[in-house]
Image (cartoon, rainbow, N blue to C red; front, side):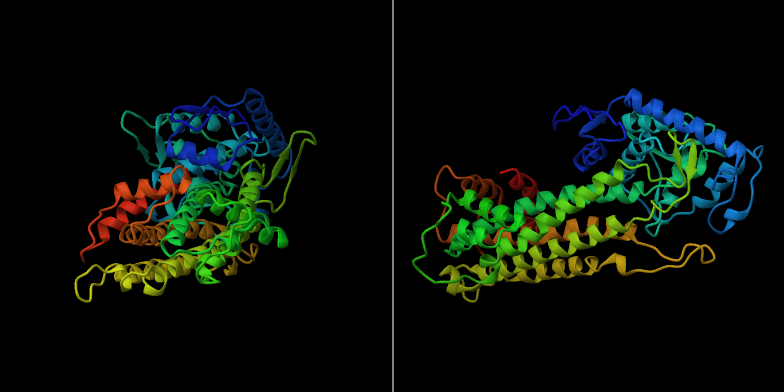
Length: 494
């Protein structure tokens, strides 16, 4: 896949084989634009379409010459051109609020790339129409609920009806909806048999949470400096003694931020810090590893010809199967959320330490000189509330169960729910980290401490200190936390 660098206006060519999660996020956020599809991939998609039409005209092919779900035993005549539109209309019953533009755009990116993998047997005109929409800034109105992890049927049916001119589009300024496209009975199931919305949402969540995980380390390093903590837990011999990849990466990053050698000198003060500092590699590391695992799963999925049935050009056959079942994604998403939740708990533990005079040598709650000053006391409550919300959305979605379509579909992965929960976790995690950042910068200011010049941590400190209000008297801290939330993406790049 062509990738010309992470900058606004760069072009990404979809080819059905080389799409990455970061590319999905860039196209969804419109920091990149879709290039014309790879010609070989488009030709593959066209051959798949022609093969599917021949097979449906001469035999029984699920969803083309038959009904779907429990109606799979009902035959549909080859002359029944309205079957496809009936299928789209009946399945376009998604409910709930309309999804944000970036989530729908992520869905379209994934679906186009999957279609270019060449197993759907869908009219290639659909591919070019969806690419035109991505280029112009138009997207179909898609409602939130309508899937249980066995295909985003309702969302993609709404997309199909929008392409046919029967469902509304939302257009960016200056953009217009694509001209209506004629779809026949071979196009409906071929379009909607996909988890493209779930995968697109998952890619967006992964992209944001990876940034927040990266930002959490300079935030933690600032807190460590504020309490005069030890760098021994990040020593290279400690990591080599128990060599988990993510833990070693977290420890190395903490040493790099603070300019600490691989074998740091023991501290002059206390022997062991609280877990919020001492166990950071062991808790942050699993989140980094879970992010990599989820990325690997999503990379397979967004480049897969997972439609049912699979139209095999090589075999000139339609294979009926269960590749639409999204257990890999559901389990990887659940694991990732639980791992990130642990790092958020660690952040609230460090926030509590920053309120303790035994660690900071300052007044309780980083209060100023006024009698009984509350300082950052309320931040513990605010961060605890956000952590509670994050804990709620970290409940494993894969524990869900459903029996549908008259018992024919007797299991569900609920990957769609897992994706939405992971997106929601982003906001709460950002709030938790922002509370810690506000307290860490305040503590360093009150102690007149700064990292040594020339270190990455120095850049992080000045970025935050220049943006955050320096006043120490008791006052509302809502605006401070909002500013800190906006700084985290920049801290991730340090």
